[in-house]
Image 1 (cartoon, rainbow, N blue to C red):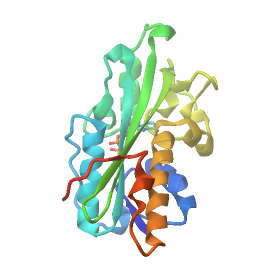
Image 2: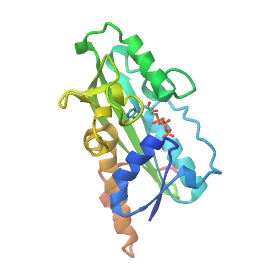
Image 3: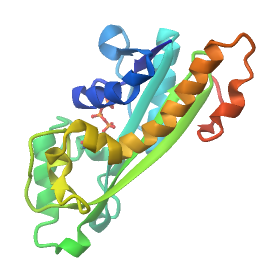
Length: 220
Ligand code: ITT
């Protein structure tokens, strides 16, 4: 089985490959399909964007496509930046500028009001038109200075209270075990495993295996 991961974000691609690589499926990325145009993420929810990306890539490649949309929801900012996380400080999608903007907006805000959550929705689109989604959330606190060199995006500011460390101070395995993306992908792995089992069977009655992911149906 081949799965095309619908992202051009390097940091994310590495995390995704490590999350699904162990299933023994061939993982391709959009770099392997340079002709596919950028999908405009203009949805109002993470789910809308993830489904749109996965459908577009499955339609263009004829392969199973997996996309996620994710972002940071800061309590003090009423859930912002949310779906605008990548472009918070402008279209340049500049992680450092995004972090500086967030720090500026939270300057002087006490720790107990700095709660935030990363949210991730994964969509898996089959070439036949079926789409499944799964969601994961990870709660934390926004620090008052960037700490750590790992990860990407807002990781240096996102403190996991139980560990007393930011996401950027964790190795990838530790981050994946607790992150929004890790949780959503634990569910996505189930459906991929179900599809693999189906592929190995002659008769296709594997639908029951997918009950923990939401089948939102539809077609291209
Ligand atoms: P693709 O759409 O190509 O996958 P992207 O960077 O645009 O890449 P998203 O639309 O999902 O990805 O935007 C998510 C943004 O939210 C991302 O650029 C980061 O700023 C932030 N983000 C999401 N997950 C994160 C994580 O695990 N650690 C840090 N920041 C994260």
